[in-house]
Image (tube, rainbow, N blue to C red; front, side, top):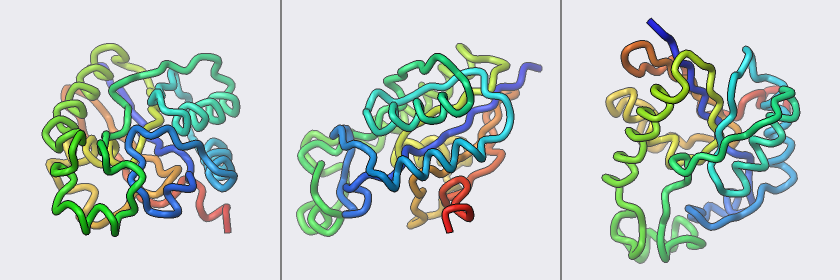
Length: 195
């Protein structure tokens, strides 16, 4: 049976990540720490990757380009399904601010609902298993979307509630008839090298 590998890499740090602001689809660039995180992660990426996919947002595309340059891959495929969850009018609010105004993320006007992101996560997995069957796919995306994909594949077990997926963290999934979670790590890839 054909085996497909999916690596989900979270983009590098932005200033809004430091401030704990809801970024969503607001196009905030990586900061210098984020660039260094991705450069360090790129050096740690094991195995031969056949294709790199990226969310259309700049912080993910910049991360994907740094990895592609390091690995010697010439093409990055922009994939809308990898886009971060939209938080509507909540984008730019700190976690404390949005918690004071809304009881859940679904209540924020204009936000993508939990159900919508779950549906998009399933579509993403179906798309990758059909279009890239038998390949090693590295997909650069965002914290919230990656959480939903991991939860979908692990039947809600990973990540545990309250566990933050750090910038430049890598999570490995495998498709061989169905999707399984091979490895997940909430810390940045190569973080021990950042010392």
